[in-house]
Length: 265
Image 1 (spheres, rainbow, N blue to C red):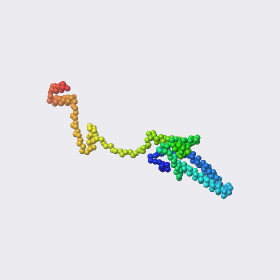
Image 2 (tube, rainbow, N blue to C red):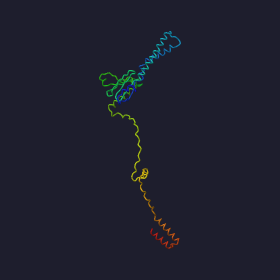
Image 3 (cartoon, rainbow, N blue to C red):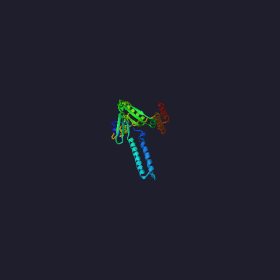
Image 4 (cartoon, one colour):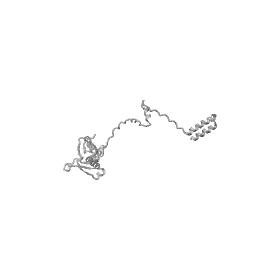
């Protein structure tokens, strides 16, 4: 974890992070870059097969050129290391500026004490996205020294907007959006128990089969099929016809019985 993040208090979170623009590296090292270029060119020139002055002078110049080249490379590397260790943070409570490679320097300003901010951007700063941001607190407006300025900060407009947005959320909590809630583990699923059958349901018999020794309701007796009057007449006539063919009744008796049955319909 970074040095500045170790200084955060309980429930304090980083909402925006920035550092100096990479143009700041060129502004600090352009002289040493020229020294490195000249030293490299001199080393290449003196390492040729021909002697420029004499062997002693050429050797001394070569040593000086190599030392200058190594010193320039070392300084540029140190500046890059220092640039990478810059931490300009906006948290939920304050603005933090942490710098330094071995020796750390940290300054912070509470968001509640920030009254205003001044932004200076040149033409090149607007083109390439850098500027100088000065934060004004109540003590500074009263004549104190400014210790929270951010020279050549990258994307200063976004940094300023994020700072004042967080200041407004701190002073007016009702405007703050709800924090992200991590999804907890899903609850343990319970097996669904079968519901007991309701009275009059067709599932009573099925439910009773699943329960051992469950008393079963007696099946109702089958209903007698309804007989049609026409069917009764037909069967009676068939019996009379059988009796007539067997000679048990006369044709006159058969006609009389048939007429009597038809009158009853």
